Length: 390
Image (cartoon, rainbow, N blue to C red):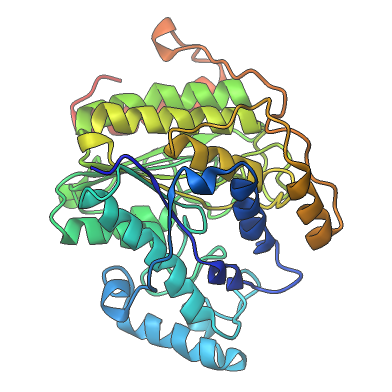
């Protein structure tokens, strides 16, 4: 097993661009890589540019007719077929859409391959995490579902237990759907409650079907949940599931849109709590996955200057075993880059000034508390199906 983490990066991923008015601004990717470099983290990892996912790989999750529809829309955006979710407000068609989407998917698939083959213990693709795409449709800013493709490739290579933990503010619906009946994959999603946020799925009662019953776990958090509640929910559910499942590989998705500044959602999580969950995922990989195998992906995040680059730079540092001190002053060179690209002023430090803390579930719970009700609903729905106590 290599001692250095891999960071999957190709400048061309910034071509994943739905247009000037779309919230998923690719500048967030460029600024993240710029901040990684400003802190010298590119020298602490192996930076790898993988090939785009080919059709045979894309077909591990996506239908052949859907891939053909994406290719057609990529060649002629004006003829995008909305029956496949293409050319919509959420997922506008653009020239080269297939190529750059396949490139992002290729980075996640290559990350999974490298971890499985022991070429590295940890691999990060912050351009990935596009978890809403379905087998036959685009959805929620996502064209190809790179987390599902990475997991499917692990299964193809012989993995028998893969755990997927998704802490994006939106439910990881596409990944859940891909493995709904597959007992080899455990999907866990913590997200804002479907009553108040897209995609209106991820209810606690969604637990998988057939041989995969009990393989989907959903924690639907009340709007307004902050650091203490978010961390309490994570630690009340995720470690126990991973300890029981003992995955060969842990795949995690770290959408930064749980942040209190994010314009598209309603949680109130700080950068410091996001960093704490990243560190927890790293520790859980070392505790429960074979040889600490960990694939970490990006995801949503629409505060593209203040939040996303800092959040994912912390992710890279943690995966590299070279964590960035939250009190670190951000290099002026990066802040100059921010202003040159966006005409905005970048943040000054790698922290929101919070000290994350939470009350352990083992200390008891309050059945009248909305956060505790959400955790209880999740545990009661899924844990007995896995032979675990609620």
